Image (cartoon, rainbow, N blue to C red; front, top):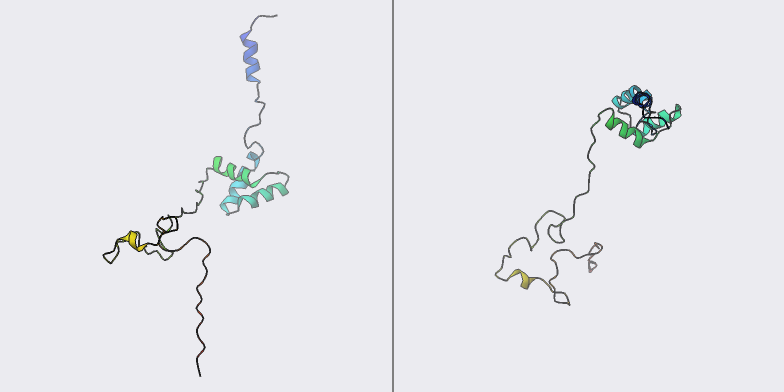
Length: 143
């Protein structure tokens, strides 16, 4: 075995290339094209389809990440659906229910609420399940 030679190692380090390709290596030649298309309000999907037609296969996700990381576009936060309130806390029209307000009469709120067979107090307002219209059949006019 030969002894350690730092000059040979430095030469090897200078010629070293990483085994893994650089991120977005294939998209960098199209950087100006992508930036111009984004200025024209092109979607990520449209850009990906255009580049794929012109011999640069890519995905809309890769284009989106490239635009965010390289072009410095702002990532818009996703819209999350609002959390549902506790049952009976707010009705559909935005008014408070009996549990949020004080009862008008001198009777306590627990005495006004119906009870389940188990003895628990049922929540005020709507019950669970489908909303079925209450249709009242009018009597035909008597002649």
